[in-house]
Image 1: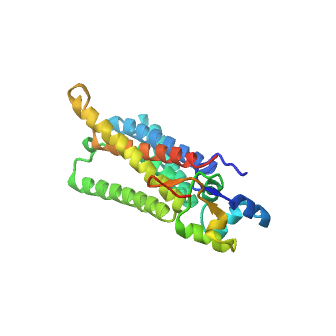
Image 2: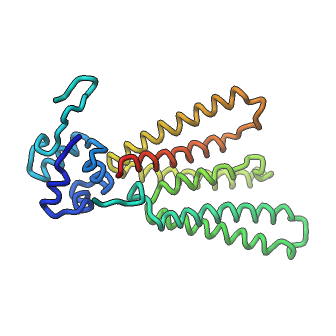
Image 3: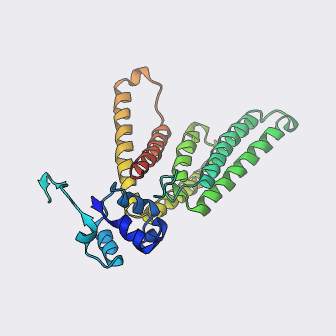
Length: 73
Length: 187
């Protein structure tokens, strides 16, 4: 899933490790989300949105990904 | 973008060195002590250096395991257990009942402590690490199950398979599949 995590993190001057500590996850998890290799769970997505004071939709963009065979977008 | 050669924060170069030391110490110590014991009726002077080196190697193994536990790098414990399990040979169990009970309690304590350490590590893992464990377990145990069924079909042509080998294969496959699954989520 496309996301703006890297941009938002860079705006605040945080490293991946800094963000990981703030979210209570490992640096590998932050790296995987930024590289669009892993979609976070709903609680983690909410935690990210709360941390950056934005909505989930403002950070994550499902694009044309499909869920259960139906188009999300 | 930050990159790391390790698939998890639970693995490091120090942990790898400790794992290598523990594995080498266990294999060397077990081999030397078994050879020394096989000379048992012979005079002590001829084989005690071998026994002393074997004991030293096992102590080094224990120290290395302590380093792994202190660093909380539980994946190395899984890999170490995969190496250690085939060394458990029921046919070499002590003859006397009391010695058997003592050896059994010792093994139970070792296995119980290892399982508790790994479970604690997995429970404290974040969602991605748990997911990689789930993927690794499903792949590795599936592959071992298929391999077992295949070996059962040709069991007449194969040597008898011991349960410790199967358990070792499961743990080794879990460790390898977990490393592969973890690396898949990194760039």
